[in-house]
Image (cartoon, rainbow, N blue to C red; front, top):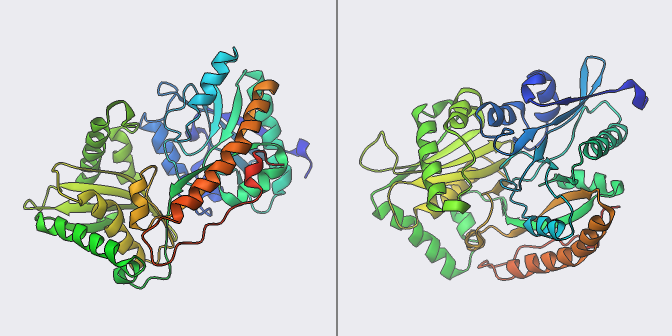
Length: 402
């Protein structure tokens, strides 16, 4: 089909796009965070709106009445909730007299989990539609004087496909658990050196000694009130960190999870004397053979509860349910001591100011080389019997794809 046979439509709300059409493209993907219910809930709950600095600006491609391409995109007036920290870029732009905001961002908002990509119907010419979408994005950004376009936490395979389109590559890392065909939790423990095995056993025992029992509940087995309780824990944890607390989600978002997305939700509850009121909770999302940690909180300061609720109990559940990959969420070098090796994640960037773009492309060459060295160094220092293999991409340090 020729490019002229496709129609481009920009949408300022996911509700403008029929859920069945969007999900026909999104549900087959590994990531759960591009599905219509997740993204629409972020918008309708008031968590992701123009007022919060995320203006939904979704790109869709149609062949007649059929949706054949789509991209979740947002015009951003700040960099909060991205977890790809480009504040220094914004500072440089200001010193150069260049307006850095607004910018266009492609990601699942406030969700630093790998998997972003364009949604394209499998029976269509992917390269042709991708080219059309990128050209439309360039035209949109230049028309509205946006400084650049940024795709964050991209799917590694999609990143490879995008290498020919001239986007600058930036490597960061998070900490991701890989299931080494474990049959049970003891198999997982067996991968650590003797000292760390003892430490993990001690940490789990201290939670029990604190009078708590951890339970895992999923889907329809989750009592409705647990969603509002999870919001209370989430909000309290964010408030403890003040300005850096990252409290982006509203109570309505958690209510919406119960109504429309509980089939993907995994809660770990820490129960004490009161069987109706958890002392603490962690919140994960699952799809296929993937598990993603999102938030946690507790009303009591129980030694090592965080480690058990956010890492050990989810790992135990993951092993029992055939999960291959567990991404526990952003940040925290303490994860590496609990079997989460440093793992590269990628973002792609295009800048429309020629001089500014050249400076950052040159800068990223050095940054990417240093980031890869850091990943290797972290993984050589894990408390494991055998250090995990660290795959270094020889092309990634070039800074520019294509």
